[in-house]
Image 1 (cartoon, rainbow, N blue to C red):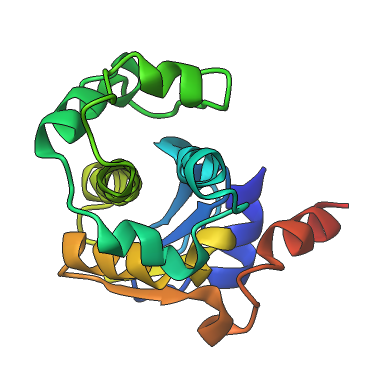
Image 2 (tube, one colour):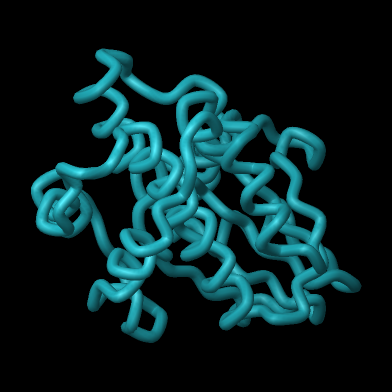
Amino acid sequence: LAPAFHHAFFAEPDEDRVVVNIGGMANITCLPARGQQGLETGFDTGPGNALMDDWCRRHRGAAYDADGAWAASGTVAVGLLNRLLGAPYFQRTPPKSTGRDTFNLDWLETFGLSTLDPADVQATLAELTARTIADGVRVSLPGAQRVLVCGGGARNSYLMHRLQDELTACSVTPTDAFGLPSQWVEAAGFAWLA
C-alpha cells in the first residue's frame, strides 16, 4: 500500500527516487523518473531497527541506540556480517516481505555471538541494515539519484551515515527536507489511503 502514497507524495518526473522506511523492518519504494503511475514497486529489504533495538535493550537496558552512538563505538564483525547476509531471506528476489517472526534475537543467537563484544554486534547489525537496504536500492533502481528516508531510522545519524557511504551515487536525506517529517510518513500514508 505504501508505494501508492510514496508515488503521490514523493515521485518526480525527472529523477529516480527511492523512499526507504526504516521501522522495525526496512522497506523501500522505487519511484522511477518516468513518474508513471503503476511503475512504483516496494518490498521489505530485511531488518531495520528491530534487531538493533532488541540487542540494545538486552545489553544496555535502553529501548534503542540513541543516534547510533553505541553502534558507532563498536567495530563491524566482518565474519558475522557475512554469515548474516547469507540468510535465505536476503537471497530471495523482490517483491518479498518479512517481520520479527524471521528476524529476532533467537535467530540472531544461532550465529554464535558469545565471543563477540556486544558493541561490535551492534555495529554489525547497523551494517546489516545499511547493506541490505543499499543492496535493495542497487538491484531495484540502480539509477537512483535520491534516497528519501523515513521512520525511526532516519533519526539514527550513524545509520544514515552508513547508508550514504553504501550509496555514494545517491543523495540520502530524511523526508523532512521534502515536505513530510520522517516520523509522520507512515501515518500520513494511511490517512491518504483512507
